[in-house]
Amino acid sequence: MKISDITTLLESWAPPALQEDYDNSGLQVGTPDQEVRAALIALDCTEEVVAEAVRRGCDLVIAHHPVIFRGIKSLTGRTGVERTLLAAIRHNVAIYAIHTNLDNVISGVNAEIAARLGLQDLRVLDPKPHQLRKLVVFVPHAHAEAVRSALFGAGAGRIGAYDECSYNLTGEGTFRGGEGTNAFVGTKGERHTGPETRIETVFHAPLERTVLAAMLRAHPYEEVAYDIYPLANTHPGVGSGAIGRLSEPMDEEAFLDRVKEAFGVPALKHTALRGRPVEQVAVCGGSGAFLIGRARAAGADVFVTADVKYHEFFGAEGQLVVADIGHYESEQFTMHLLQRQLRDKLPTFAAHLTETVSNPVHVR
Image 1 (cartoon, rainbow, N blue to C red):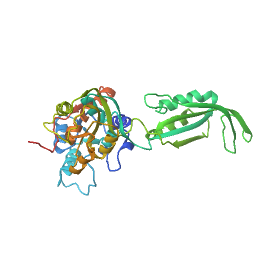
Image 2: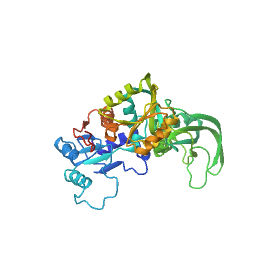
Image 3: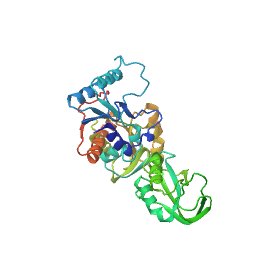
């Protein structure tokens, strides 16, 4: 199987366009047409992980965190990053990272955290703006169904849990073909009037090229009239963090014990308890302190995240409990999430979980 087969699958789930500006997700070592037999899935790609991949016959490492974050000016083996890259190149092991783009889809990293905590009715905590577009296209009435089906097949027309959504108006269109035209209907040089359907549908911005290509293939006209509009509407499945509810309210201390057990942490840092039941819970894998205010405004009783600095804990304002469980701990099960996705979509491809623990933080 080619690397491009695997990355196409992963990127249809978590499009690279959703990664944050500072990020560097994508293929970091290797070529898209490289053949691979098996993948090793890890949170971090380190020298030890590459060595494990070689030992286990895996020629691709899929990591959540990119090994290349900043510019590389040399490959001399001075740093762990350089030694990791040299080892991967030397043993022909490709490296692919799927980072904040996987953080920013509701079925990604935060869904896995929420599932481990038993949360229901999950929704995005901080929706990412400018994610939706509206396509309007004019098509001969007799061909409207074919164009609609092509658009839906390319991923357009999804609104929340609904798909194949469109609005249609029938009217009359006019055109006159000039020199060099080969019109589908009508006579060159004469104005043609015919029944047309105006199809309106929405799509996720990263799908624009795919949606347009499908529409143009299905459309019978030589020159297709269409418009694309940016929408202010938020995409319900794209953004930072997530919030959901417990099936039944819990005592605060009992809930924090659940967190510790679910993520295997012997201790966690948290703000003062409020003495009130926990029902609404917000989560953000990795460094989520920037969402404390959003979690508070959304009515969360507890916000589970990591990497909270001393002064950031004050942002809870006594209105919610902020629980810092550690960066590695919050994202450790992302490996399981990726493995399930690959096994579900590519059941014959070998996707193994790393046995290397890459957490650099140790607690006594």
